[in-house]
Image (tube, rainbow, N blue to C red):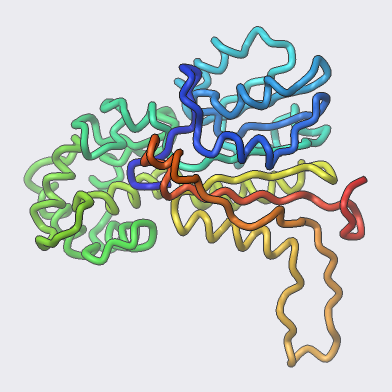
Length: 321
């Protein structure tokens, strides 16, 4: 996930990020059941559905009502498809997943349609309401949160989720400005940050890290990812594959550590008199993958994409037959 986000596919013919690698990683079988937890505009989902037979099943989820409307319009008539509005963090609570899944995809970050529509408030490059919610019917908007948070909380968010070195200076400026005029537009916030940031030779906009951090916080993206990974582990069948595309080092770290925790024995502790037995429950499939030069040239937003794939092992740490 870059500050600008990442396209999660489009039905117009533009392939979503790392399309071929994702489909290969999921190792789709015609009668399998697969969950796309971040439908976006359905690029990956279409690829999965094209490989399913009459007995196959595709489950799609998204928090965004606009994405769900696209899914209903494009896939709703297909009896192999079930659609659910909600975060992938809630996937284990969806009855359609109870029988187990052969593959799960999380394509993290904000989708291009969300980014490109000014009214959604994700982009500092397009003036719009300062919203940033992937689900506009849930939680506080960015404007509402900035209107009530103190400067310490704002600074903590900017540093924790955006690694913004000027977090305290920006936070103080936000609190000072809102006492004079409410911050309700993306252009207002972007201009304010640009005014207080020191001049440098960086090619990225001064508001890049702050917008990214606020969006991650408002949407509980990292917390949802941690919960969603645990839910995926609970619902995957032995031999089922988990594929996660991340666009930010914080996200990738969570995914990498999750896979390692379930696939590798923890380091030995010399203070423990008895070695604790470890049985792996996941198998990492290859190393982390990145988009190739051809894809990044055609779609610069793919430059920070990292794909990790893991397979759930059978009882006793064995690969499924």
